Image 1 (cartoon, helix red, strand yellow):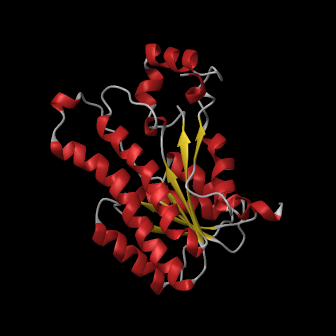
Image 2 (cartoon, one colour):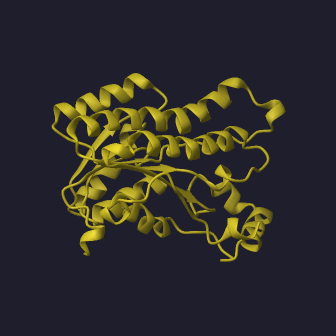
Length: 255
């Protein structure tokens, strides 16, 4: 492996990583040499994911975190400190979706989506950055944006607002932490074949729309995000800060 993309000796925390895109990011970074800290809200799913990676020979730790709860995040980082696990790379992947017209949307449903995506990204990043700065070790943050960081669609207002907020939070992180050799960037996945999109994939009209509106004429695959994640985690991106890379098959280019 070229040294520009070598993560040997680095430790990466990926939130929401028991399955789906988060697990793919974790497996990808592990294949590049990183030690992995998986985190998820569900202990059983977390244990299964941890065992999968360990069975492949990777160094993996699992820790339960609900990123919507500040105390859980602080306690988790204290626990990692006690285990002498120092985080060098964070991928803020945890997320949920709630589809509903805005006029019918209840505050609790709005708040839950925003808390997990936007506030959770802030809280996890804050705790990790405090430690990176104190160690003078530098670090990498990869936040997960979306096509809705740029364009809106009906019935996903809280998700759209949160993902737009993450785009600007990424820039704020770069502005404040760049002086400490910390880079904060984001990945904006297009329409990807994931569990979260299962209902959309099965919707024939939506499936046709995705394929017709995208120059690639297809959905993206989870493994097609791994290269960008490794790039933004590695020395290859040391002078890239505050950017969003959209992995979308060209969708945004043709709107």
